[in-house]
Length: 215
Ligand SMILES: Cc1cc2nc3c(=O)[nH]c(=O)nc-3n(C[C@H](O)[C@H](O)[C@H](O)COP(=O)(O)O)c2cc1C
Image (cartoon, rainbow, N blue to C red; front, side, top):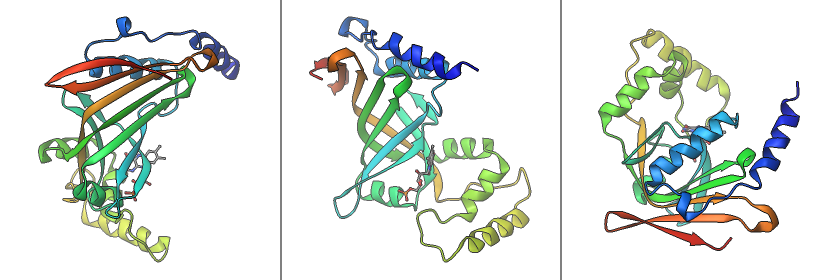
């Protein structure tokens, strides 16, 4: 009942939180994991939602939300249609940026790096773990293409439901994961009077350099 009030009080609490270089995990993946866990415990809605920015063929920026589906020492993983607008953009220019925004914790994480396709076996493993409807949807939707009306899409969905029974849906070749290998990760902790804490990790000769940035 008092969920709204609880969230407000959490906010007050966190505005006094600091993020100092001496508190930072030397490994940015572990630091990210800690913050993501805290976002989950704080009931942030869709805490793994992130903005993905790409560069189009015309050299213009383009951004949309996708879901983070994996994190390890290689980088950050998400899944999509390889022939979508973002997929084609990445093919031309693999430089991407990711942004997480956890307002309940007054936190932001910014990532810049290079996207590459996940090995097919890993995309297969994730695809086979998805719900049946999502698997069919991946076949039915030519993501980012203009379609005449939604009936076309429904007919496609119908068609693939008949073609592939539950448990027997192969991964479409044009659907899979991307791994974003980060070159820069910035952690931002909001503080009073705009005196925010910003810590930037950058790759230097296989090691992570940690620097404090002015807010
Ligand atoms: C909360 C949320 C999560 C989303 N997750 C994904 C995702 O994981 N993969 C994906 O392809 N699209 C996802 N989308 C849809 C994308 O934002 C976007 O509409 C779609 O991928 C087409 O983008 P594009 O035309 O720029 O390629 C999500 C949207 C929202 C609002």
